[in-house]
Image (tube, rainbow, N blue to C red; front, side, top):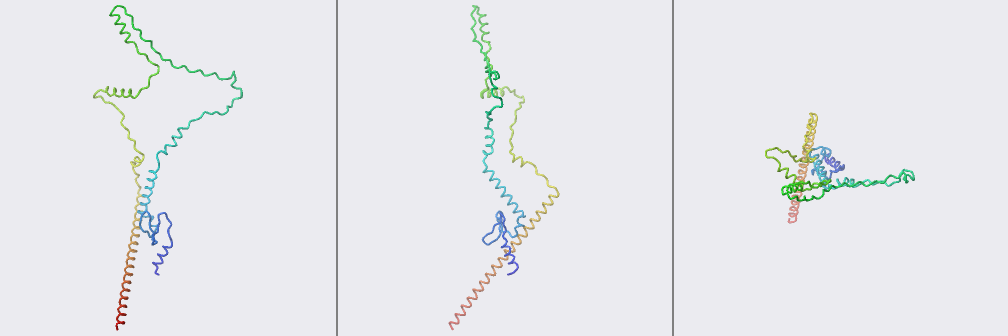
Length: 265
């Protein structure tokens, strides 16, 4: 057994325990989220492909949890908190016994008088004096009497408010500028966060990022070259096995022909 076979056997014995590390039936190490065979697990974790796959899986999990979470659960604590009302304390008082006697008892509260509504007396028709002009004058005075006014004004209804808006629009003078509040757009917090400008990276951060990407590309290239070399080795091995099989078949045919000639002689 050569050194390469020993190295492969040693690698096969040391299995990697990682959430994304899996082995197929042949014992080849694979990355479950990248779906590629891996030879050097530590180097694969630093590649850009693996980090992108991990970030994508994390974003999908967060999105699924956000969809499963019901919106009613967020408002439930506040509604329950609003229903709680303070109950009047009915515990024992710290006052001495017999404090509320006949002389110390608080005076009973008198009911507040209800507001009186002034009602105007019904208009008495003026008596006729016999003079037509004077009777007409008294009748006009009776018609101009003020209507009864109640102390409590009736609350405005939807019909009265609509009528007020209509009369307000009709009272607008053509050519005169009128000012009305413009509709306000409620922007979600996610869009506000997306609209925020990203911070510019410094020269040191840019240099570090370029070096990291260069290292990742080198590691990825080495993995690709090693994978291509192993594929070529496997093809060469398969061809050798095929040649050996053909050679054995040819020898078997030659032996069969030699035995046939010997039997014929």
